[in-house]
Structure formats: structure tokens, C-alpha cells
Image (cartoon, rainbow, N blue to C red; front, side):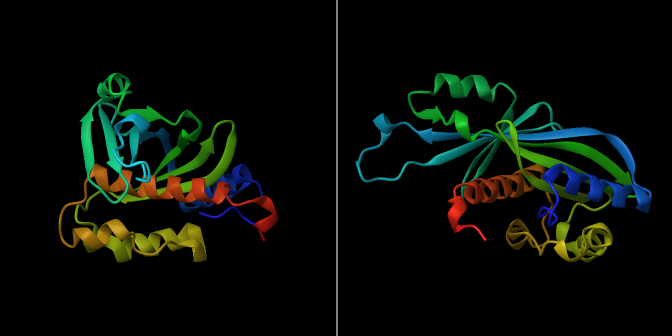
Length: 204
């Protein structure tokens, strides 16, 4: 969700949550999704010109006993929460890019059969963007309810309603899983990271 013109990230989040509350959505606690970036250690790369691989280790408060490890355009491994300890032991192969830690934290809302999570995306101390996650709880096949999700999102996101996520293209009629949500968070976080790398003079 883009930041409203002339408003801060926090003000835009407040506008969104006010719209949800006016619809009749009720607060259902908080949520947090975090992502740490690891890159392959220089000692493990054979060719000097070879690009290092990035791995994203993610957590989601909806799945407190799980840890997700994702490669860009690659598989998603779902492990138990002790995976973080394993990554410390693998520091000869993967190094933590600590400055790249990013997270989305915010409020969960329930509206009829919809679960909506509106989060502020932060890197370090500063707010960098807004995430909106919408789930239609009775349905597990994403393509079966996409039109319904779109219609509901338009009621509070207006013309900022997103198009169909790329992860759906690979799923067709298969069951949507927590890993599919994590792939979308990874894509959003990477998009926000890339926006931060644009020099200020080049921004319009």
C-alpha cells in the first residue's frame, strides 16, 4: 500500500485502520513478520566473479513454532523455531547481513470471514512502508476466492487494490499454504529495500 500524498506512514496506517473500523472490523490482537538476510560466505564461492546467493530467514507470529527459509525464485523450507540456532552454526557458509533486517508489525482485524493485517514495515528505527495482508478464512484454494478478496479489498483500499499475486500463478487450484504468504512478504520486503537504495536526487 503506498503512503498517502502529504501523509506519513503512520498517518496512512491510521487512515486505513479507521476505514476498516467503519466497515465494522474488530481488532484481534497484533502480528509481526520479520526477515533477516543471509548471503553466502566469500570462502564458499568457487569463482571470484560468481554472484553470492541470498537466503531469507523469516518468522511470522501466526506460526510461532515455525521458521521459514527462502531463496529468491527458489524453494521455501519450513523448519522449527530452532533453525535460527542452526544458522549460527552455519556462519562459515552463510553470513547474516544485519543491516538488512526488516519487519512488518501491526494490528489484526476480523471482519466477518475476513482476517486483515495492516502493518508498518520498518528497517532499523525508521518506517519504510505499509503491508496489508487479507485472508478469506473459509477458503483454502486461493483462485476460488480471488474475486471476493478483490471486492473486499476495494472497500477500504480503493484504487490501490493489488493485482493477483505472482505466487497464485504457480498454484492454480492447489491449496494455499503459509509458505505462499511468506513468499509474498519476501517480495514486498525486497521491493521496499530496493526503493531505499534509489538516490534521493533521482526520486520524483
